[in-house]
Amino acid sequence: MVRRAAGGGGAGPGAGPGAAKVRAARRPELRLPPLDPYDGGGLAPDGDYDGLEFREADFAGQDGAGARFMDCSLTGCALDETSMPRARLLDSVLDGVRGVGTNLAEATLRDVELHDARLGGTQLHGAVLERVLVRGGKIDYLNLRRSRLKDVVFEGCVLVEPDFGGARLERVAFVDCALKEADFSAASLTDVDLRGAAPLEIARGVDRLSGTVISPAQLLDLAPVLAAELGVRVLAEE
Image (cartoon, rainbow, N blue to C red; front, side):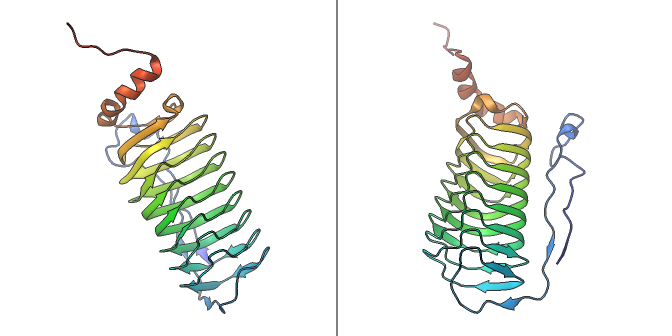
């Protein structure tokens, strides 16, 4: 596998003198080697999967705790209630995976691309994500509490009620994606670019937005939430 993270020289659309201060997330660039087809067996705890192509595999309800996936491609796989806590996904592509209740708590995702996923209630609390691209698809109720995200890009996707509570985000960008009712409670944010999120809806943790960049239009949209956080009452003149 040959790959190098694509760096960000600019700060994205609308970059100006102030925007240049935002450090852009580095994206993974993956070129997988020739892959061997997966033999169809089930996942195994602490399993070691290297250079394999998983196509339309059904992993529903299976236990892959602590498994390692290196230079792998997972296409159209079912991950309903799949248990993979502490798994390691390295230099791999997941395309069109789907599932509800997938457990990836305390997992490590490094140099990973996730395309067109349809996931609900995915558990990634305590996980480490580094150089990860999430492109397309829809993820409902994503649990990223107390996780660490560095060089992560959410692009063209829909995130419904994602939970970043207590998480640490550094060089994270939301590009042409919907961020609905997000929870940033107790989160630490550094160089987080929210300008490409539409809508940008923050249910909790608006007080943690230091370290983010938003657009003027988003500032107006967030004004009621910010006023409530500051205890400001906005009343029309009588």
